[in-house]
Length: 285
Ligand code: SAM
Image 1: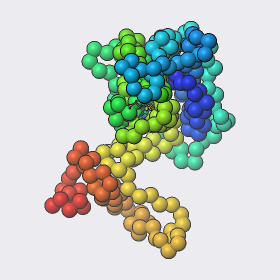
Image 2: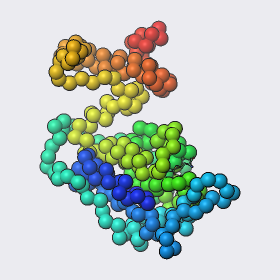
Image 3: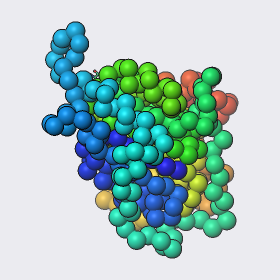
Image 4: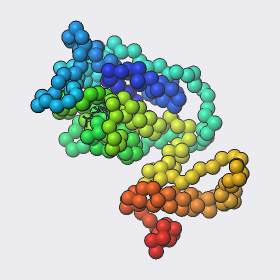
């Protein structure tokens, strides 16, 4: 997968070089280019923003800068071609993770993100904005199949809307929010989305079951997890986890997931198929 990020703060994207994403870069599963938007600014001050039409507070990011930046990055040409690739921060090569599982073949998710009338060969442009559609695990699954994703990081009051409208000519465009709150800029949202997407690319997580059993994969939140020691500060690990009975452990885990979801995010249960036992656990019959 190729990721390109356009931002006025390239150093904010430094975390993309670390840990599992850094490992993915080193294994050539991932390549990342972080582009400084100011390269495309043409005035002496390298300005990227201007006052909003219609008045009001704050500044809006200029189309005359964003347009050429998105044109170049879509094709990896012009100023975009001069950007240095992000390198991995750590030498991970050939080191198996402690939870790597032999015999588990990496598989792709089958989901794709192509809307009616869209050309699937165009790169995906993700524009983080609090006014976008909420980003979900289903998006992460679908986007983990993309060859080329470009992120446009807004600042100030955001990017002139015509930039987004025009980008539809060269990209499949998704305006997404990472939550109902307002950040200062899109960089942190890009880190969130990139992590969620890249960890689902086959080969990035040693143990694919790690994400198959994660929260949201089956529509439920994941229940509690425990490790050694068996007793800690007077608190015991639930007995069932030592039973050696796989079916019993699985049933207990599902019960815990159901109860946690009911308590914390009850609306999620509307999208989950519940059997007789599930309903009994939830006190629904
Ligand atoms: N004026 C905008 C509004 O009210 O919708 C808020 C702009 S915000 C101060 C600046 C930038 O931060 C946005 O362009 C976007 O890139 C990013 N941002 C802020 N909150 C976000 C969120 N919840 N999800 C994704 N991106 C966000």
